[in-house]
Every structure is written in structure tokens, then in C-alpha cells.
Length: 601
Image (cartoon, rainbow, N blue to C red; front, side, top):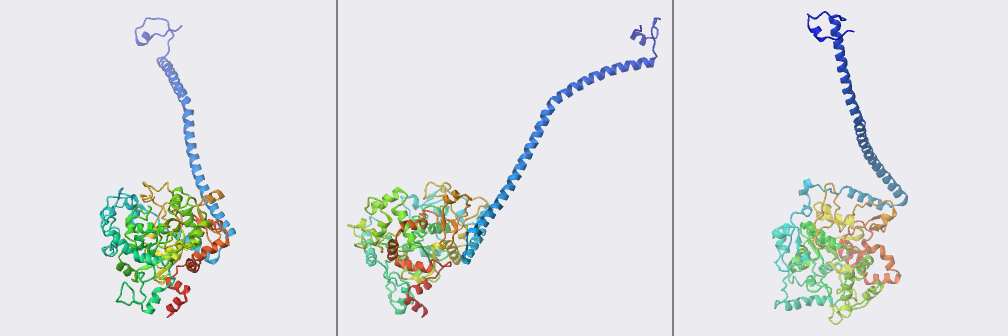
């Protein structure tokens, strides 16, 4: 048997042992093959073990990668699919709305034009953009001043009720020019009536002396309803008391007219007030607006503060000091006469359906949903329960014992009668601002039923729409109205791309197709169409229009209201169906033959 002998291979002098001898090349090849095979075997084992280890984890990794990719694909498909579905849903909804409108609404040509105009207005609405905030009215600028204060231009007082301060507006606290725009405006409108403070020895004699003309005119109960007294006076060359040495043609003088003179509202409230009590001034546009209670006066006061630059313009405005600075009634007599007879100043008013206005006053004051308001009314008028609407009208139909009211019968007597001493919320609209006697002085008379486009036309005529009207924005959701109370409401927080509503413009609400959502929405129905549109009135709305039939449940009741508010109905019947604003001289000529003759002559 051949034996592997390493010594032999390495030595040339080996002992002669009988061995199987291979050629050198062959022996070397055999040796290499064995070692290679051993190495190859080890390598294969290592590779096999490594491969086995990897193969154990590889399916999991592969599955994870594949699952992640699938998730991404699914999400992408779902997003794209939802996007397509949403787009398709909007198209289908639009088609359904169009089909529904085509099938259910039979608009006249006038209504179609109004709808087209409304859609055009909505498409032209301003969009908020923070990068160009300087172009927007200052009332919309971001809130940077978190304080409330008395105006720097007002006399300082130790008592600061929340509703008597201006909030979040630095100019009001530090700039003595606020709320006026120019020094010229301040020089004119800061000339206020002198009134001694309570406790001053001159207070009682002053009040007694100032109340005399108010009481004299209140005792006449109602205006004469001459409609165009300045034309009549001018034709007769009458001399007026304020200008004893002058005889001016077409002079408007409420002091010489048989009306409670301006300023009476500073001395007495529900017991008789001046006919010009609610005239507010927009000096920048030279607009004198007659704000009538229950005809949107709150919104016009808020808009006045918006034009001034008050950031808390959504707050309760009636006792704000910047509003008081713009009240016509607080001015001295010669300033009032200057404004009344300056043709650059335009007078305007809106009138409401007397039927709706009286019901709105009843629902808001007498039968309010708020218990505190009901109790306050009952206490003021000596009642122990909430009277019905019919009882309320019957009280108004009774003649009161005196006007101004006597202290002896003040409570229950204050509810009787429709005259100068009636509560402003149900006092006839034509008793305000000289409408009954100086109607031609008004350049614009509008109807509340057409407030959306008529208020826009009014603001365009005086130059306030482009500067402020189209930028006006309010929030009707109390949750979004930030502030410590309704007297300190913060400005709305606007987002880029958000549409600004515009003053007195309808809110763009989206109604769902189901009836439940539509019924819950606040709506009003047009008198001339079957269209249901969002309610434009914001604030303490009573939705009286939808309740007219249920409260005016007899012809006798409606006829009694028409008799009590005869002057209001005469004016309302002339403007209720007109889409455009009316002029006072045109209406006066239609209301009185004498005015028509004087106008034509």
C-alpha cells in the first residue's frame, strides 16, 4: 500500500523503500485538488448558511416593502377617487339645482334680472388677502391693541361702563382727532349743545327752559303731514324763528315747523323725543342717514363705526362714544341748520312694511323670548303678565290722557296712543327725521324689502361702497364672536381667500338637499317669487315676516293697524314695489296735490 511520505517528497536521499511512485506533476495536482475541494466544501457551507439566514428574513422584508407600496397606492387612489367623486358630486348637485330651479321656479323678467344682478354682486365680492391688508379699511386690520378706553377727544370720566368705551382701537385712545377724519369735520361736528351736569345749580333751570318747546310740540300729538312744508313756506315767504331777519326760499327749519325740535331726545326718552333723534352723520360722504328703530338701525350704527375705523364695530353700538359724536341731535342749532340746508349733504332713509315692523316690536319688546326683557317691559308699563298682540294693538288704539306723560299715570298711559310720546320702537316711521313735513329734503328713500341692492346703490351714490361697503364683514355665529361681552366684540378673524360679505348683502350659505337642513336655516321668502333666500337681517331679528299671518288673524285687526299708521302706509304703498331708490320730492308730489302743484310751479 502506498504511504504518503512528506519527508520523501522533500528529501532527495531517502531510504530505498518500496513505494508506489507518481510523477511529480501528478502528485502536485492531486494535492491541489484535495485542498481545493476542502476549501470549496467549507465555502459552500458558509454560503449555504448565509443564504439560509437571509432567506429567513427576505420574505418578511419583501412583504413589508410590498405592503407599504400597496398602502401608498391605495391612499393615492382613494385621494384621487374622492377628488373625482367630490368634483362629480358638485357637478351633479349643480345640475340638480338647475333642474329644480327650472322646474319649480317661474320667475318673471324683473325677478330674473334681480337674480342675475345678485349673482353678479356675489361673484364680485372682495376676497381677503393679508399680503395687501393696507388696502382694506382699518377696522379689518389685525388686532394689535387689546385695550378698551374712553376716546382721547372726550371729556375724561371716572365711570367707564363697557358699552361707553371704544375697544381694540389705538387711535381712539391716543388720537384726539378720532372719530373725525379731518380737522374741518371736527371743528363743525364737535360743536355740541351745552348741557349742565346733574348737581350743577344751572341743571334744573336749564332742563325746564329746554323742555318747554318739546312739551309744546308733543302736546300736538301728531305732525300735520304737509309732506313738503319747506315748499309751502317758501311760496308764502314765511319768516322762520331761527333766522328772524332772513327769508329763504325752500328753507328747512324744524324749529319753526310744528315738530318737536331737535335736542328733545337729550332731555326725555320714551316720554317724547325730537323728530331728529335718530339721524346719524357720515361726514366723509356728507350723508345724513335717518335710522328708524326696527328698520335696521343697529346695522347702520355698526357700519358707521366700521367707516370710522373702530375694530369693535360688531359690538352693541347704541351708546358708544364715537356714535354719539356723530348724532345730529347733539349739535348746536346753527350747525344743524347748516347741515339741513347744505345741498352737499344728502339725506336718506329706509322704510319698513308697517305690519311687519309693529309685529317685530311686539315680539322683540313685549313678548320677547328673553325673560329679562319681558319683565323689564311689564315693569315699565305696570303690567303683571305678557299681553297678547291683539291687546297690544288695542292699547295703542286708546287715546292717552296727556303727552308728555303725567307722572300720575305714566306707566299704563305710556302704552296708550300712537303719537310723539309713543315708544320709538312702535312710533310711526314718518314721525322721524322730518319725513312728515320735509320729505323733499331726502335724496334717497328705500324699502327694507329691497335693502340688498338699494343700500348698495345708496352707498355707491355717496362714495362709500368702494371704500368701505364692499369690504364690510360680520360674523353671525356667537361662538366665533370673540370678546368679553357684547359691548367688547373683537374684529372677525379673516383667512386668506375668505370672501367679505359686504354691507347689507346676503350671506352665502350652502343649503343641503335634505329638507331638515333647509328648514333649520334662517330664511325669508320673497313676496314676488317662490325663491327661498338666506335672511339678510343680522342682530336681534324676530323673523316677523313669517309670523304675520298667525298674528294678524282677522281683517279687523289689520284694518285697525292701517288706521293707526295711516301716514306710514301711504308712504310704504308708493315704494314697496320699486326696485330702485325713490327721491323725496317725487314721493311728496305723489302724496299731496299741493306738493305736486308747488313742485310743477
